[in-house]
Length: 57
Image 1: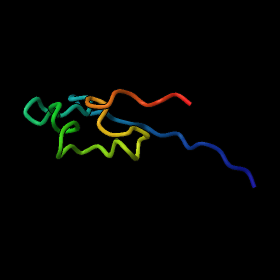
Image 2: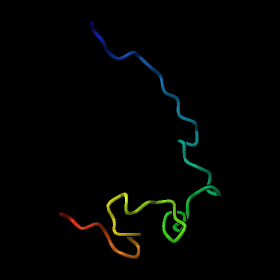
Image 3: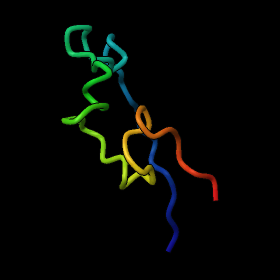
Image 4: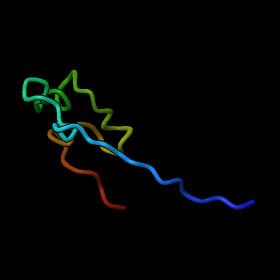
């Protein structure tokens, strides 16, 4: 059969989906001992703030 795209409409809230300032992430939210990032799973030897960037292979 045939398929295609259905016409749709998307609405963005006035905030443009940006969190309020009091909910903004701080550096330590991703970097540091309890950071939310799994740097090794992303290909880094650890937190790039401590170890630098990834090795280009």
